[in-house]
Picture 1 (cartoon, rainbow, N blue to C red):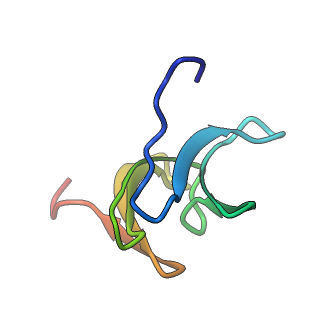
Picture 2: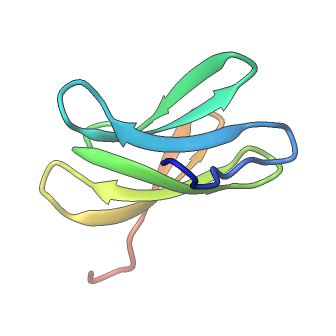
Length: 86
């Protein structure tokens, strides 16, 4: 991440992604001294791409079957994004 700009929204929430101690990739939100881990339940890994002014996050990752999917994270809830038939 050296030299890379991290996404930040107008509320000062900063996004990041990295590997945990077991080698799995996860995203996080850092806000006012607190980290919130971002990975949809049951997924192997996830990275986050953007956050808007309302704190809604979009990202992507692999579920337990190894399928690449997108997701939206908002208010503690996850919504999977995958077009029909993919």
